Length: 111
Length: 113
Image (cartoon, rainbow over all chains, first blue to last red; front, side):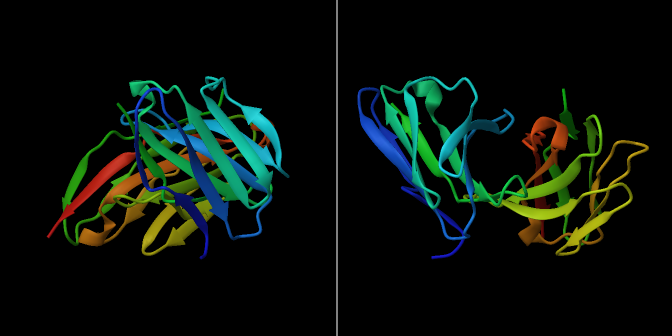
């Protein structure tokens, strides 16, 4: 595997489910990011991890819970989501604050 | 605060046409500027970048010049192909903003054969 991978690529969940999104980067980077991409809205930065510490949390609801167990892996734990949380969730990584490399995204649908 | 404004899409062109997608920015200091591309069903890929005034970024036939006097970073390609159909995002990164990427809304490009 190369670059940034994300699993699953598609996820459908009910509002009472708990699920997790996984991101793995094979680039040796030390920073990882979660973004939310919704139609007709700017890309929304959700969380930033640098050296496995969360350094940014942009007022994201607590139903989204990130976890960064090491510099190569990033998770986004989801519980009691709302239909408006349906979106493409993108993971990215970078070395410091240089250009970011993105994964293919997870298309999430909340019913 | 810092911001990026892109021309609204969708842009529809015929193959081999000339492409311009306008991007202007507002920022203090000397930001770095980027163009990312998102092909259907994929994540964003860095297309090109420029880190100082008058720099020209280029890749895959695309070019953009960092114009500080007009605060612009317009994306151009002389002859588009069907495979260039994608969404293009302009972004900036500013040391004064902890180098967080500030994004435009994206411009959808459709190229017809």
